[in-house]
Image (tube, rainbow, N blue to C red; front, side, top):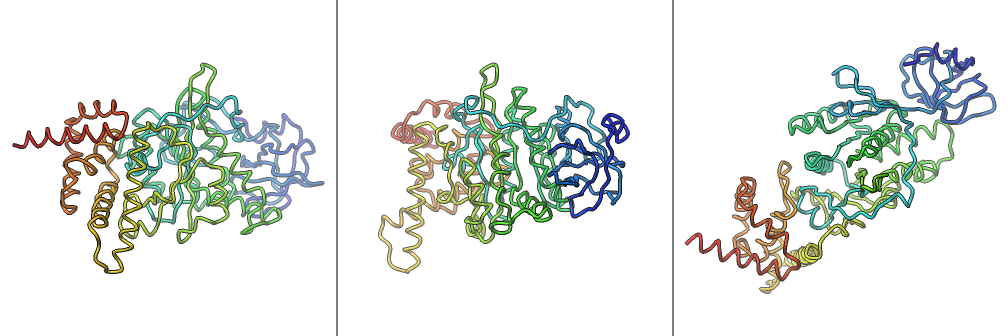
Amino acid sequence: MKDFKDYLEETGEIGYIESISGSIAYISGLPGLKLKETILTENNQKGIVNSLQKNLAEVLMLDLEGITCKMAVARTNENFKIPVGEGFLGRVLDSLCRPIDGLGPIEDIKERREIEGKAPEIFQRARIKKFLETGVLLVDLLVPLGYGQRELIIGDEKTGKTTFLLQILNNQTRKGVIGIYVSIGKKGVDIKNIQNYLKEHKILEKTIIIAATSACPASQLFLAPYSAMTMAEFFRDRGKNVLIIFDDLTNHAKAYREISLITKKTPGRSSYPGDIFHIQAKLIERAGNIKNKKNQEISITALPVATTIENDISGYIQTNLMAMTDGHIFFDSDEYKRGARPAINPFLSVSRVGNQTKKPMEHSLAKLVLSHLSAYKKAVEMARFGTELPEKTRKQIEIGEKLEILMNQENEIILERNFQILLLANILWGRWEKIEKEKLKEEINLFIKEYQRGNYNEIIQQLQKIKNLKELQAFIKQLELLWQAQKR
């Protein structure tokens, strides 16, 4: 690695830091300096040229340790780059892709890449048609995702968003997908908990954590998602599907706002600069499903997170992110307080491209379940008035309560797609159609344990051949008769 003296000899130009404001340093000298060029201080701290003024350059410093006025600065004559490679798997990195897990330096560095990569062209992109299995029944059935999709995860703090994202990461890395988790503005203890979860489930070696904690300067919080996306592009270019999680982009926007206000950019709504949409959209657009040179479809699936306050999804950054993604999954704090896990509101969640990954029978089943849940919500509202309920309304409440019990899924449980259909069909037409709701959870858990032991593999294979709801209903009824005969 070159240092300050090497670059000084190469370029023959020296500059000096005239003043420092937050993460911004103002530098004089360096007549050949270019926009976006990397500079190096005499103590080898890096910065990126943000703008060029008449006699000064405005530089975003990536590390503030030891930076003082009148410190000497050299040009590097290249844009900012980060190291990438398979050696980063299983490691915890900072925004500059330096290891911060105490496990020593990274040995296998393939290359260095500029962080501002170009989004794939339209002709490179392929239709999203392959289903991405989260293992969470409510999502896979009602808000399905596809490989290459960009789906916003939105909701108040402490409503289970991170837990849900780790479930997806756990499920997908076991299927050979590379996982990249970007923590922006979180506490150090939160990052440690995520690392421990990945270790416990033996998937850390297939995952990279890039962390910019709340103690980091705004420049590192701003840089983290770009470094992570550059790393994702490295694996994609080598033919591997990638799942990248940005947790969360509201903190990223706040970091950019801080930098922008220091540099006296004109503030707009909520004091954010007018280009905040462009800044984040350019990042999200780099994800997607593309065809490589071998005509293979390879994807980067992006799950950005946005935090709301008191369930208000109409905030500036939140609506921006909704506009640049392919849908959103809304974690409702009211549902969380009610005890729903995951606390997802299916009526306020949208998946614009994920639905095209479903089979016709799954479309029909999702519509049926949504209609049952909708009727249940209305029936519960009616029951609050204390009037005597007709039989039809009581039946709607009963089915809705059973569906809620089924969709209340424990964190450690991951359910395969066809098994989810079997569970639902058993509530609608099968063995649990007439069971009391108090006993249902216990029955479901026993059923899941039997499935995990491989008892229902043959049934699952038969389910894959079913084309419509009528066939599914007949199959479950026949299955129920068989089970009843076995009991006798």
